[in-house]
Image (cartoon, rainbow, N blue to C red; front, side, top):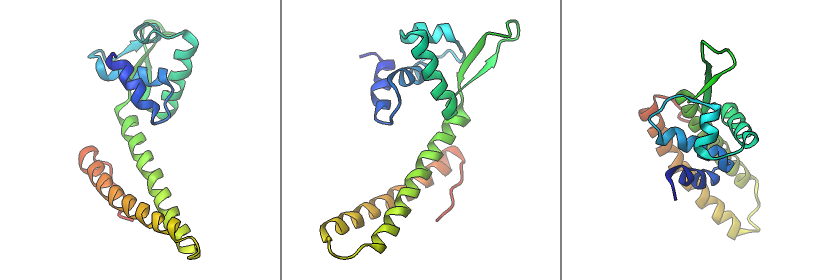
Length: 150
């Protein structure tokens, strides 16, 4: 399997459509910084419609952006937006932080009638507490994006 296709497979686990995963894979595996729409479509072997939909998703998440080529106002050059990628990581971790807080709150409101589920929830809360602490520290040190210590 080609690296671009591997990115598509792996990113499916993050709920990316396969074409969006291929586009990210293209940016990661190529030394070329800017791609026209046609180049992206050709490189990932996708239809115009599928490429357009996937680019819209990546533009909405902020992971891809574009600039207008000066000579041709209609020609957009797409590129991987590094700051947008960092923000996506931050948002994902923040969402897990919200999930962790909700689990803690829910457990505190539960009765003791289902000890098996309560025990599992305690384990999951401990897992997320430790994991989030580690990940937030790594994001702060590697990407210079501060997290609240809550």
